[in-house]
Image 1 (tube, rainbow, N blue to C red):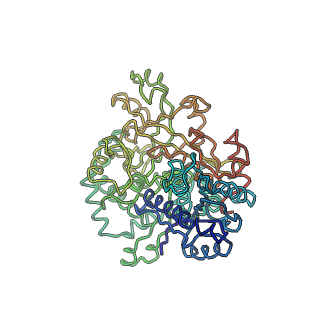
Image 2 (cartoon, helix red, strand yellow):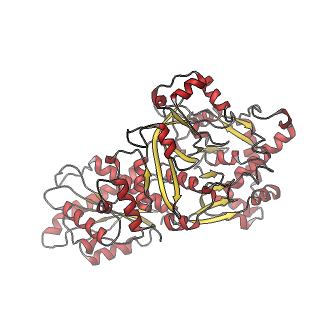
Image 3 (cartoon, rainbow, N blue to C red):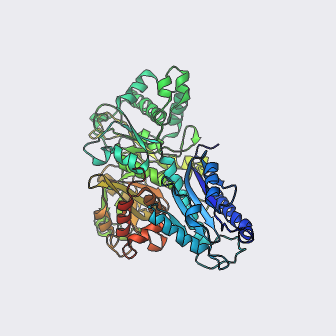
Length: 590
């Protein structure tokens, strides 16, 4: 029996015997098996294994059969149910009305039997009983014996399943905050009620001294540390101190001691999130359990960084798809314990299986400003200007863009597709510099690279407003690359040891997407979570499941897929309807 969140498929059928039901049995079960195989073949969990789908062992024509299938599904961690039908059904008898999971219904668009009528009746019932549900209906009439799934139906089935499993993966997991609020940043003031009500997650809090305690008492696997330290020495390219005054330069002894310390921090951060049975073997049974954390954040500034080496290496390699053990599933760990940005990174990751960048949304550079300061004329995606997403010292090495796809284009990959060549390319594109002692008095090493251009990216942020009401902002766009000499001029104005990513949004002509300046002006926080690919439509579906309205996006209306119930709150103003629907239904877990 799996412990992973599962999609269940329920074939419902016309209950009338003596000819009607019998004629529909094979077709109805075929629809269910086809939908299940579609999901298995196209979607994977973050560990790289295919989604697990359980199909009802019978068609469901009456209430008694519905209960029998409920009992069949009971041992599974069902996070979403896809109901399928080619015909009329006794709607409220055969629908599942569990409000704690996600629901969708695919009604076949065919004229022989009224599957579309059942779909409409089911959507009406779900709306009346206050349970959001997604409708799936093909654009063109099909023949009754056609087993092909139309592309628009495939898209909706997969989008529903992907978002539902993301919801399921967060449930009963924790956010681990190591430390607390960073330098007055509101996002690092953790809102436990939000995590419980909207995500079904708990919160665990540990003082930063726990990191130092584990370093000093040797609460880590000593064999792994030896392996990690040797790998760091051999593979990480240490750059010159390019930011400090000579009086702050590290001696050789200080440099080695700091590399030792920050390497241990990477191992310990993972152990704190996930646990590590190796710790029990060396006498630390309590620490071996971990905190069941699916996401975490490290406060750092200033109490830690005024005294100890910063967490840049911890943050960089936690979020990178490889380390001394080779390719591996990345963690989600937020800089400055920005719990809201860490949560946003988690949402993005669960939908894409690709690790996420944590970035400051630092500066808008207009084409005119770039020309004036650097002499470079912007072209391509950057001709509308760009946002400087330079984080203060750390982000995933995947964001170098040094990994390439089958066409040789820069990309960020699922961890199971990362090759030795990819790892070397990302490492060779990165230098690690002694960090700025005026910011980080305790030292540490900042991660520097320049992201390759023309990668499709999605920038996202979850914000809390008006007494802890969550809203999501989504911007699809592309990375921008400029000549090295121009980039260096821009980097030197801030910190040349920090990672550099330039991002241009896709403009639509409508406010705030009428200019890059207005996108920057409308952004709701100092941080953003940025992932590879254009997946804003998937985020909109996931947000609706969580009852989080989307306050800003540049996704075409035709790609928006929300529960059919949302139409009851208005169809001409989709953003307003989303806010009204989320308010009416309330948080998923309240």
